[in-house]
Length: 294
View (tube, rainbow, N blue to C red):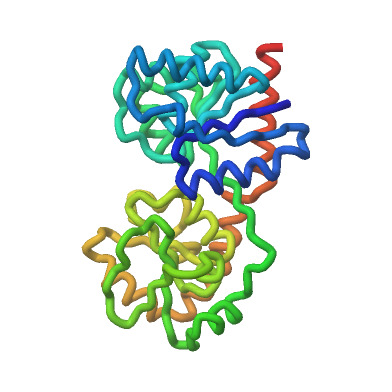
């Protein structure tokens, strides 16, 4: 089976998400090709634009059994090019910026809608989307990632130094005294060394997934946390952005708590983001969709 992964102006996070899946699926007899359609798929839609994009997409997809769109713009393009009943699906990697009926109508033409988290699933379901399933990005940990002590030594962190790792899409680092925010250099080493992971307001799920899998506890907004963690068991929460500094000060003083939560979050990360079960599920979805058109 050949599956086309369709992205547009893919962020680094989406590139990792799709690349990780492409590594795991060949063992199921599924070959993945990732195509970034930015050159021929403009951000705007409309009758004239859709017609031209549909022609290019049908031509590009002619040698594939299934098209898997990552993101809403590419899902819209698939709906226009293939309509209802054809072998295509989408993954909503981020919350929708709009829940306009025209978008929902097109998403409902897909054979399946995969949602990168329960919050996205709820938003799309409430807007009228059908055929939804929650999924997570599979994490592939590079072989070179050091253990915590080695990573902290590499960064010059002493036993009493506290460090917070920020994802690549965080934006400007906070300016809180007595804390070191890790943003430069190797992200995996930074996550291995850090005491906490702090997501940005629009950070991709895959960065948090990577942090959890190697034992770096996330500090999440309360309204988003409970899908992923249990506070003070395998992660932490903050009540609001205004309370972030005071929450960090309190947490970073809890050395033994951080150590125990670090162990527990690694188990939780494996439960949610383990490579093999996620690839298993994707392969099952693809073969199910393929069988409908057989």
